[in-house]
Image: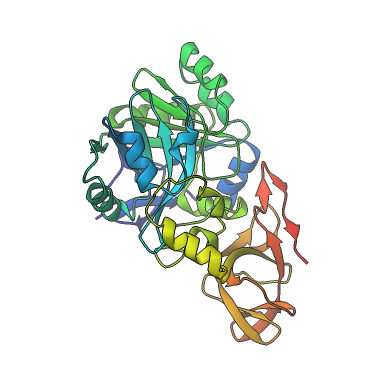
Length: 363
């Protein structure tokens, strides 16, 4: 038996299929992964993401510390209640984890991946030497992600008017605090949504209220196909310590302007100057079959990389994938599936946003 979120008994009561995910007992689906996927694309669904790790960082040197720890520049968060996506790198420029950092009224809040929790906390504490900061893991908090075109309206139906008015003022990548609830316009689905970080004791009641308001529970299976359609990376599949942000389609998180020193900066500069050898790109396959992780990718008869994440897209009704391949190549692309080469086309992610196809095929 793994760790369990405060909402776990409600997953069991709803006959969810429970699987181990990073040491946590989590719902993979509640009957139909396909229906759950479409629910978020067309209406509203809720995901229990309380397995994620919430870390609050405070202290006199907190901004300087995060400027050193993260490759994106927290100076962009020029006022409280803004957020940005970033990564923590090692000295070689490899990605230790990707995360969202929120600026609070006093300090910052980070949400990091559950599978990297222990490694992240050790690294953050090691790098804090010389900075006046306090790193506080918030195991007392749960997270419910309410996502989909009707998500904001459904959430407002189950919270009080003042909280609803606070949500109405939010723009993407902003957040607010209402009593002891933290609400952010962020998500992992490519849809409108709110992520609610709240005390463990409050989480089951909010889950029940949302269910009564018609918000469907969504398992990790649909969450994965949603994020893939949205072109969002999964840590451990599409990126890890062996690849840089430039090789992972998140080069936009790297801010090299000025003389800010951050962990991995010199390695990234060296890689840029030498020429980035690989890229993470999108693949589209219209033929029957499903693209899966680790399938080899060929340009003509030359192996140029492999699929990192792949699935059948419920929205597009064909297979899509992210793949790490050589930066430049020539020839027709194909993927080897069970010893057979199947033609694919290169596409620029994301594939789907707000329920619509948005990808463009690349020449």
